[in-house]
Length: 164
Image 1 (cartoon, rainbow, N blue to C red):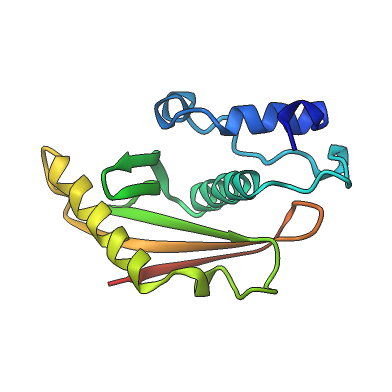
Image 2 (image 1 turned 120 degrees about the vertical axis):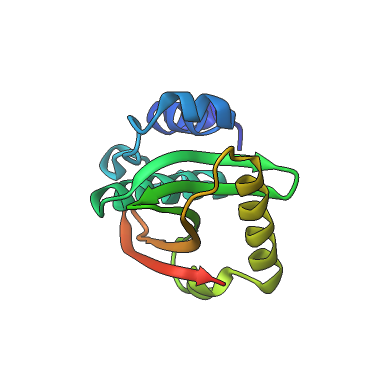
């Protein structure tokens, strides 16, 4: 399916979501809300990229509402990408966001493989080495987001210290 065949609202969202990480960081958190499911065409299912973008925006909004300060999003390194880096109190928190459109193929929590866990630890350690000052503490959390058929989040679960 080409981008031109999508309804205007979804096309704008897809283009905004496809920005490079540096542009996303400069944009801040102003565009955290996913597209309005009531204005989206039922015949155009969300792509995997759109599902992931909605999950990350939902997770960032959830974290902000629970007292986290978002430091960066979509930080890339040679090991992969960190979805969200946040701070709460004096702790630096690396957040992996897993989004699913249902539990037909398992829950978002179950989708974190041992290889992904190792990669997340490597990503966090690489990021920490790039800092001038080490934070007093850090951890890796998981935010699991399940979306209903209409694109709205039906479940958001935050697991602290999800990866040791």
